[in-house]
Length: 65
Image 1 (cartoon, one colour):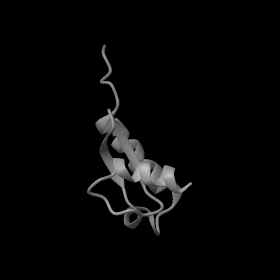
Image 2 (cartoon, rainbow, N blue to C red):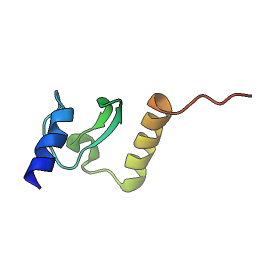
Image 3 (cartoon, helix red, strand yellow):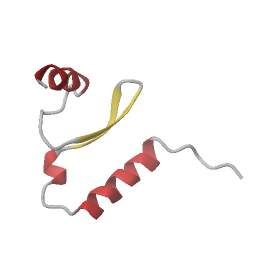
C-alpha cells in the first residue's frame, strides 16, 4: 500500500528508505534503527541479539529488588 508506506516513512526522517529495516519507537520518535546494511549478510540470531540489546537499552524498565 503506497499510502501506508509513505506515512510510515514520515516517521523515519533522517534515515534512507530501505527494506528491510527495523525501528524501535517511543512516543512517535525513532529511538533505534537497524538499517538494511546492518541486516544484510547476518543470520536471524545475530539480528535478534542486536534487537534484544537495543530493547534492553532503550525500552526495558529497570528491575527493582
